[in-house]
Length: 624
Image 1: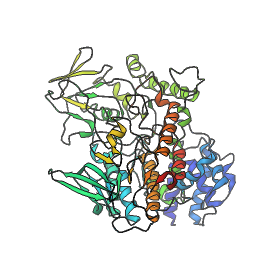
Image 2: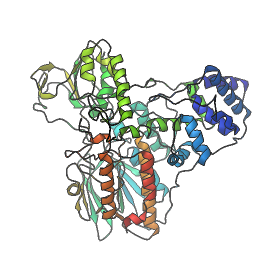
Image 3: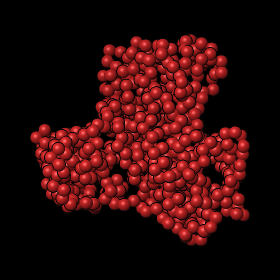
Image 4: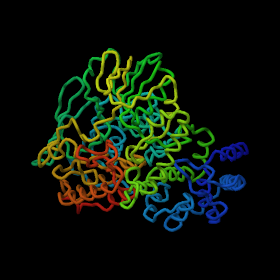
């Protein structure tokens, strides 16, 4: 390393996360004193990266200097892959919190200290092939995995490019509310430019993966699946597809993987006059490319995740923004939400051994399962109307203080924006400038539902009319309608009849009795309500599917179907777990629950628990 690069690295380390650097030192030097005082970091509060580790400046400087010296020396690391008790000790020091033994295997993979379960390479009989529905995050991974297994595969994508929801959602402010380095395939790191990825960069990330892995040759674009029928005689699925020109085609495959996700069908409210509006009126997921908002009056219907990203970006550009809110949302602060990942941070990620792994591990600990215990109902809690346990009540106080500080001097907005249900009861959102936007003179928050669309605007339930030139409908997606639009006929009848309108169920969220060789990615009860990256869930599920398919083929079978008793027992466990979780709290509605109050979307367990369930399931749960 040249003198100039040494100088650059020492400067770059000033931007690094100190707890991550400390763990790198342990691995590089083998010296465990870095796990003790005065070097052990304090516990982080909230969602902050806690870059200083809560340590005095002189201790931080000593750690940075030691890292620079170790890297410059270029020595082989003494502990290249910590495991077992040592890794747990490092994790507990690193977080400043208790870390259960059950996290050791998953965090070892995150750090690269343990290899993930290898992709199996079964003996593939002639005629064994697969069709994947969708070419988003899950579809791309499915194509890559099946090809590596030696199984001929084609993905059918209704859009004209890859990336699914990241191709479709182009509204101002669109992006992820999971940190960029966590919202990434574990096997494909990326030099993200911002702490939370914006839509264009996420789309480019997925598009570049498709290109570099040569996945496009296994994808047909502009093709929508209309039906899928199981042929018992041949043990194959027959799919009817339709191209954009209206032409139809019948295709056959031994295996079908649905990778359409849960948030892919926009929902429009059933309002009188919806077609009578004189100007542009559209769902947020169908934002027009050429829309000009300068000086125009914009009505935004809804205050969910999409609306909260849109409003701060258009406020000040539009002449006026009027927001229609049915119920307020809890919003968490994150000081680094808008942070750019500059050259110094990029250099540390690239040049300091083990740093990227520890940085991802830090994000995983903070955003994955850490909050889950605070969402479990305490039957003895004395304030069930406002929270579900003492920790959840602490979150309520914290988020309330933040809201009141951001809206200081505006008691009218505090009254409108402060939720009455427990935090995390609906999807938790991060403040990306929402409160600042609400304070603007050209933004109005209306706490009435829209009753009617007029040619010149909207009328609320009280009869008040609001003029608008543009109406943005940010009312979410048909999340309960898994595989909606596809008539799936299995061995026992249709999937629509099996599930009903809004009561989808699947074993581990992946397989359904009566529907052999059909696998779901991001299926029922696998969305993350407590936090974390859905990409993590999809990777775990695809690993599971690969293992099942390999077992089927190596065992000489042609059809694999989950046992009804196994699936029924699992359904009972899911419902029992959700009965003790915050998402069944009666104080609010959310998109996780169906009309009967059953939670059909979110995972009731921690990610680490779901991972263990997937790993424990094998061919014994199935009939071949």
